[in-house]
Length: 199
Image (cartoon, rainbow, N blue to C red; front, side, top):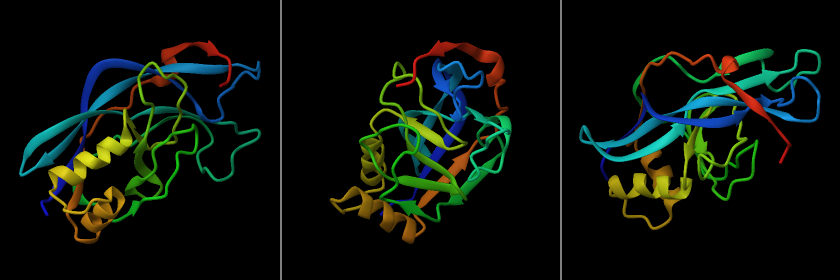
């Protein structure tokens, strides 16, 4: 079993995703959700210091928790550019949640890799054209999250057919590491795109 590092980079791909705010997505109460342009970032799967696979992720997302009627499970009230901007260098991943399901949209993919606390790496939109995903600071992988997990297993040469068991084994043995490169959070609120009907 090889050690593998997931690098959430500060390198934008140059693409923009149309995201909704979360947990509340209708700030002006007109029955439509507001959409904001957020940058897409490169994610690298690295073994022995060499990037072996490249993915894309949503790293910063619009967050609006209405102070007048807040979702109490979230501490932050009002508007936040949600996401981790500080540096995390080669942290050993402490937990993997095989049964985690995305909270804000339907996804056929399960599982989440803990960054810290409630900040996770999990499934995101299948395609950038699939607008309207939201997040409260988690990193959302664009594309087939099951394939992302398979890439981790295969590059780490874990000889276990079940991907979730393979990732659990890596975490238990301290073989899954995480790096987050420092990045300035974009001014998402100024990147208002328009409104859309709820899906």
